[in-house]
Image 1 (tube, rainbow, N blue to C red):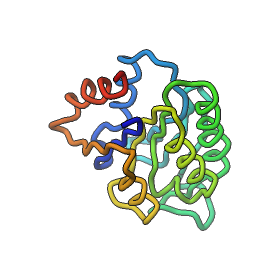
Image 2 (image 1 turned 180 degrees about the vertical axis):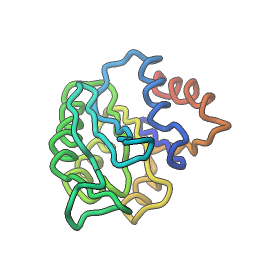
Image 3 (image 1 turned 90 degrees about the vertical axis):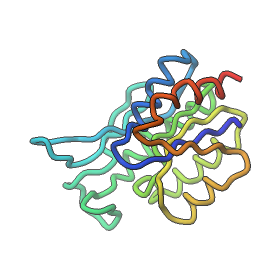
Image 4 (image 1 turned 60 degrees about the vertical axis):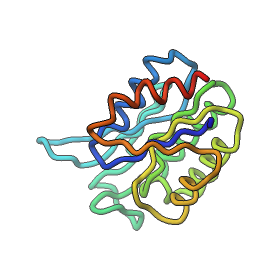
Length: 170
């Protein structure tokens, strides 16, 4: 399968796993990942960072608006301006497309959802993290015939590096 999805609870290390796989494979990759923003030890939001180092705010407690997940307001402008554009560039120029993550915050954007489908339908390898629960869109992505879903936990996360890397290199 050319589409690999990693599913697991928050904080289990999904983003770290993707970074370790990228280090190991040494392939041309594009796309984006997310990182927590902390202030005084408390999480206050999430950054979105493209693999070619464009950075923005995906969500933050100070972002106003109706698009919210818990206490975080979602910044659609940076999601589309950094995330969607990085997926576009990856589809054109790279061997591997990274999407971290397909989750409740990201699916507020129709452009994002369309671009995820374009990536999954392409000939490119896709390595993505995906929410555990979610709406119908997230469920449909996980149920596709052309995806392999790995459920990640603290016990199996180190083994998944080699397992997923070998699938991509096949």
